[in-house]
Image 1: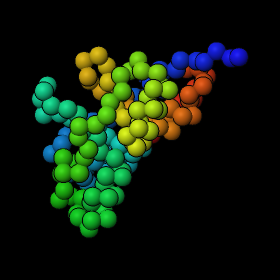
Image 2 (image 1 turned 45 degrees about the horizontal axis):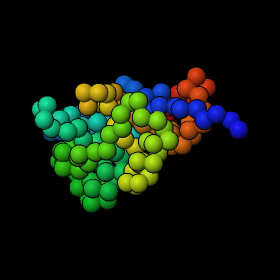
Image 3 (image 1 turned 45 degrees about the vertical axis):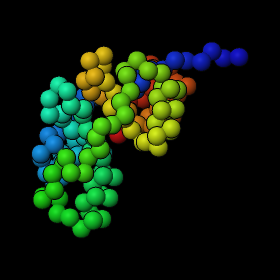
Image 4 (image 1 turned 180 degrees about the vertical axis):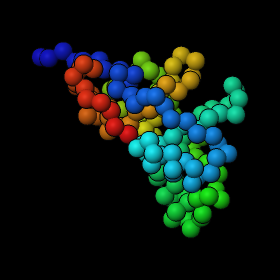
Length: 142
């Protein structure tokens, strides 16, 4: 029987995390996503007691484009998800997959011990790397 490898979420997360302000427009967020080649952005918190948000292309598609709203007239905070599920950097990929599946999510922010986002991980990343050692894993895609 082969020994299970304990790949951690932090081993496969995409970093650095891309953060946008909650009061920026969705058009600015779309432009940033396109320039960086990412499909989600963390949304900064108002203060230390607040939580980070997450804006995805799905949010933009559902709440702005399909709704007939002008991206330059909608602020990020109007369509982002908040609060969001976060995964600790040292959580195993197996448990990360279980958590995202339980809540029907495709991605999560990865946080350090102070709850500061240090990366983002997708269900796809975790499923495809579940049994692969960190040194063998290719670079993550978002």
